[in-house]
Length: 489
Image (cartoon, rainbow, N blue to C red; front, side, top):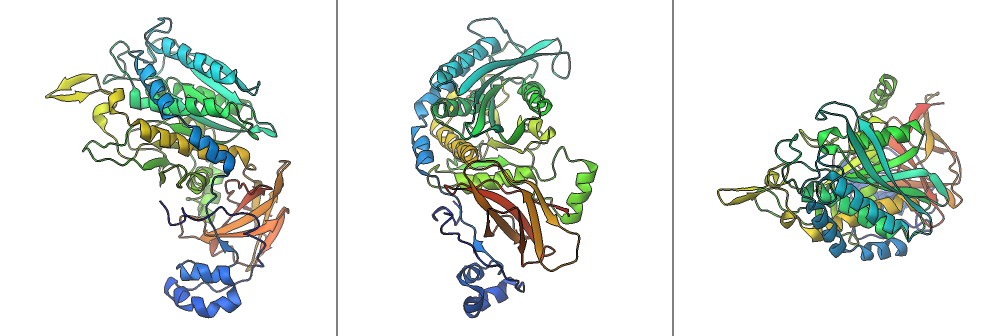
């Protein structure tokens, strides 16, 4: 857990307006030594930051957002038995290889597809019409790892938001599987950890959220063709892009089923979240801007990852979210990459330490050692906590205002203060905005300055010395992810 896990939510009454004032940035040692002397002039918030060894400056130290009553209730309802039943049922289809049978009623990817679709329809039936389920299909012509024209089908359940339906958040697991030979479509490949576990997370959240009212739209998808080359998620992401969809966050849950490493050690309380720095879809012009302002650690995906840590790394989920500053692991790639390629913020959840004897392996015993991706090597209590992390992130995102748009840091004049502008959101419960800042060497936002329901503000702190961001707040105190400003006028 982080040192902030035990603190309460940043309630809007607690983070009241603070008058900013320019301060000299001191070395960490000087700041600590000067904390007591500076308190009468700098205020309690600056003194607290100084005592903790952080920078002095305007605003209050940032605190994580604790789950509200509705979210805590949702987390309590996540059912380990249902998650285990989904993983075991998907493994029972023998193989779910993308090139396996699509019309055999008991074995192959078609049988798995139909079962997932049936389950999702059952969840939607209890949604009062808010959730719809579709089979999103296309025919993939011969390509890498696809030797013949092959139908790729995603099972997509969409829970339409009530006040901001055009704002979308997506969670996926891939229901196809593989064994040692990626082109072997007939041998058993139960795919329990990779990736029935991720599908189980998406399905369990679909079941629970179907009966709840969300402000933004949440999409729960079981995608196909991942092992052959991210085909299903690629099609899904391109469809969103072609429609001009406002996808503000996407999570791929891929290999989230085991807490045991290949050496037998266990870590049941950590979940990795991979988040890229330099955006995959960055244009040359955007790259020039990023280099000029030093924004390598402030991509939309990094802001999304910071948000997940803020709302989901706590006692209510029982998990530590370990953010990895990479797009994905070496030699691997998951379905979030398809969304990154379309310019959407996205990240990949995966277990802390993998056992490669139970991934991409033929089911067999060698020298007394069992190989293969079998359900008995899954930790269903761990998957349940992974589902809680996903639930906390998705529900918090969907109930909060959207990430601010059009955020600009004014750079037309040489000044020692900072002027920020942005476009006001349209949410009916929008209360206002907060400016956040941190030292350029700090990985996380450290200070917050409430500025009210405005679209421009001037902070008495030099833009040359620190990084700034803007986030929205609603009347219930829910906060959006941070938007990193671009230079402009």
